[in-house]
Image (cartoon, rainbow, N blue to C red; front, side, top):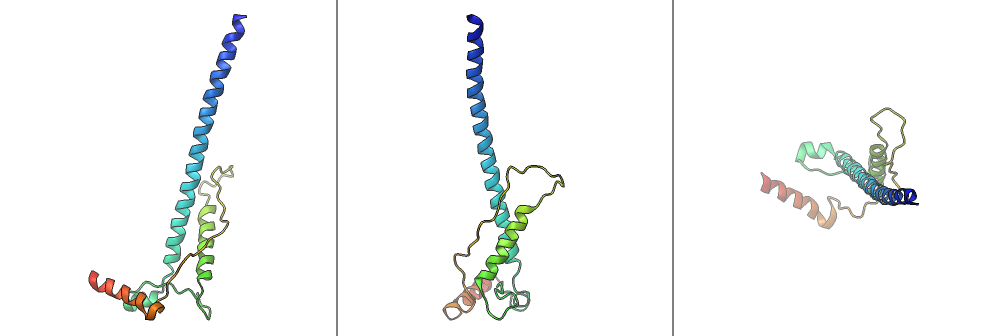
Length: 138
């Protein structure tokens, strides 16, 4: 009778330890996924901002994004498509070269631009704010 009591005791202890270990691993995985998504988003926003109009910057030192991307009219949706593209590219990078299961795989479901301002908004107030900030800096 005493031989079985140690086995049951060890099984119960192992069950508690295994539960604790799996909880810690799930928390680490969740944090890794969050960090990967945040990093991909930051890189994607920097990539979109890097598409500023170089002519405006060269001549006037202004950083504005040309949201028309060569089309006839401007649209924030085009910027949103570029953001989504860069997000997917940043999340799909596999530096190792090995085909392994990725526990931190992220997919882009949707992106949204919640607000934007144009240089011509409020009779040029956005442009004026940048000019004033530039002059204060200089």
